Length: 229
Image (tube, rainbow, N blue to C red; front, side, top):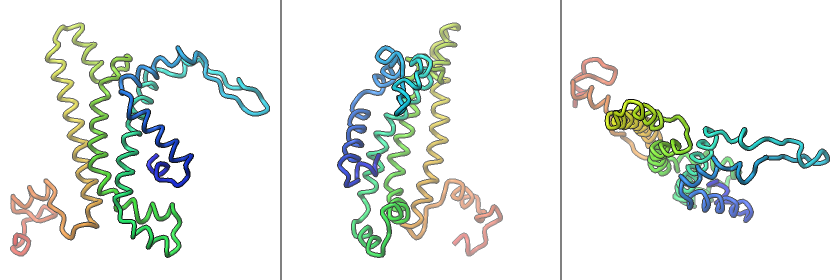
């Protein structure tokens, strides 16, 4: 979607713009309800094949669009619209002179994007994209409205029987914090990986900082005097 938006082809760029405009402009909860109730608008989903017939493949929409698939489509397409804009911002942040230099030596557009633009753009893309991914994880609690058995739905099911509302909600919060913490660590190391080309010396990781504080070298052995300095 990001590459389509930057394409000189007006059909591709317009299609990408319309996608982002719709899925970013409408609330996620509304999108989930639309996908879940799609059968009210299209009771049957038909696929036609030329020379065979318009209803060669005909599927009941209630069978095709399960609650899980509705949640997957709602969250995935909404996140795709936001991610496309984040990636587009990262691509256009690269100096245009590098693109011209790569084109002058005969690089194709695809090779230019893979070898020159994206490796540098990732430093700009990863922080907001990681933040948006964590936000999507938290927004997944909305799928409980369409009866998808996710974390919040499971907590609601239990406290509706035990009447222990606050303890069960606190358990759900703790699980969300654990998963978000894992994603934050993954994001940290991905950012560190793509920062190698922009700085000569990277800051110490938390584990390396702890080893240094305890007086150990990089491989867990006692640090030598020159390593301490």
